[in-house]
Image (cartoon, rainbow, N blue to C red; front, side, top):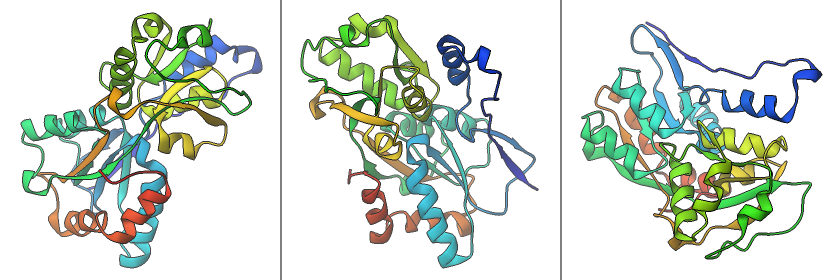
Length: 273
């Protein structure tokens, strides 16, 4: 039987409806990229559920893997929280890559993964971004006056209630003594790529994303890098799921850990965990 990944996109509307407020609400309503699944059984190709921040690098690696093996992985991107919960509900995932340890812990606690395969795949950095058309950096130190810089605008970030990039961002802002001043200005996106999109479109003057996200979008620039000790280490664990078709899942899982794959990840800005 066939599984279909469904992507919800923002529809184009008239120019009159493209006010900043309307565009902001529309962008925040976009579902996680490819995160909704309609399925009636397990797909023939391996299904890879991966954090949205991995899209560019993993698309590149998937193409290389297909060229090498003739097998084309089905890639499903979204917030790690969304993906873990969909696997729990029976979505046909063979490999799961989370943007933090907590949601892989969740998958392990609910017996969704083969714990023997769990390994730390990648690392990343947390950055503050601004539209590329602006200038000026922000010194992200204790007591930094980010609130004044945001002004009447919004701070775009993954939902700090469950999206890993948002959780890291909230922790960093709390550590720096900034969170209480800016939390009322947060535009909470359902995944880090939608937070990136808000800044790229100029709908938010600042945003918090991973360094790899900033590298992937020419319309934004890095305005500051959060100190590594202001949040938990950013680690991307990977595991094969309990329901996986191991004949398809295991080769791709191993491919992700090869020197060739690691070199590609590093080219896109990821680090070793």
